[in-house]
Picture 1 (tube, rainbow, N blue to C red):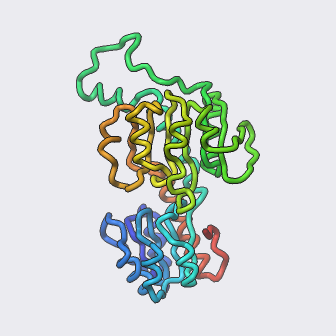
Picture 2 (spheres, helix red, strand yellow; picture 1 turned 90 degrees about the vertical axis):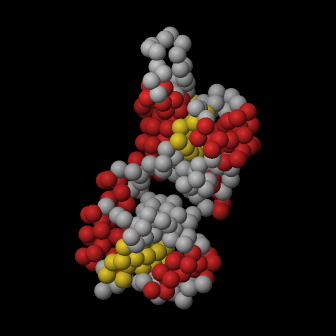
Picture 3 (spheres, rainbow, N blue to C red; picture 1 turned 60 degrees about the horizontal axis):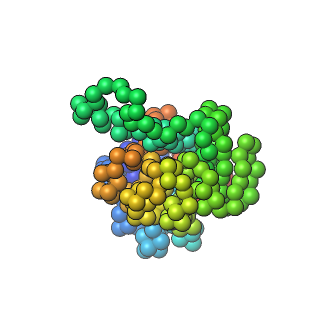
Length: 315
């Protein structure tokens, strides 16, 4: 029986299936794997099922003499895995696209509405016992219906966000994408900054990784309208977080809704202190059925690999 290391606790149904098929070792900690742990795991196990934050760096992979043949990532984003270094060691890498699309798009809409309509600020007011009752000019926010929504990254998740905004709220959709793409009801613009200039809400939905690190920074914030809201459901390091803090402090943009952070789980104190910022603890896929689907997809990759079949989701 093939050995499989699972780096963090999984939904019961996923773990039960894994244990029925493989000799499973489950790490009994919520901490991410260090580089030393990664190297050891690659040397010991036939396959590893890691999660966000596990340090599958080039250094950790290159230091191994791997028994491992497959890194089956739990999640669509794999910027914590040096896939090129893995392939150089003849280790296949897979992920779980598709399973996360709708859930992540839903969180984008949650952040858009919470930030535009000041929902987090309002809830804090009520919980603090400071709400004195309804007033005609109290906590006026940005009305989302009919506004222009700009999307940076028009993959599966970007298109799901666009559909929700266009059909549900009557929004005009513009987008920037690294390749030319035809999307019904949406207009592709030449650059990220062009999207920022015309949008009331800008949603970041790009993949993570070296190519997109700090893709979003001062140039976009300077281009955005002063009332506009930035939402990020991609990866934290896609945004230059220091530049975002400056843009918010100087009023260059109107607010931000974030589910991910550049140095996750650390969140800058400046962001925590701002009332016009909505902060979520990486809830993008945090629904049981979605996490089960992700786990089953990761296992499907492991099963196919050891059955000698093409993996369904190579990266």
